[in-house]
Image (cartoon, rainbow, N blue to C red):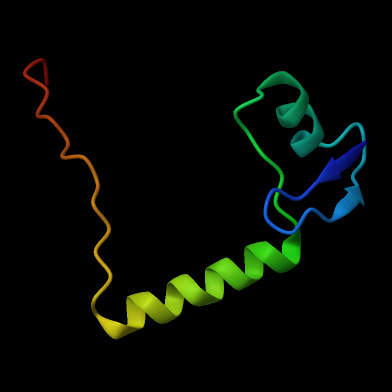
Length: 67
C-alpha cells in the first residue's frame, strides 16, 4: 500500500496486511506520518518538556459513583 506523510509529503510503501495499513483503510481519521517526521516531533517534544514550560492539558477523570 502506498502512503503519503502528512507533514513532508514523502511517499512510502507499507505492507497491505499490516495493522497500520488496515487502520488507514478502515478509519479515515488516522493519518500516516513517516518515521523521520515522527522521530523529529518526538525529539522536539522531549526538548520542550525538559524546559519545564510545557503543560499537557488532559481532561479530568470524573469519579464513577457505581464503584
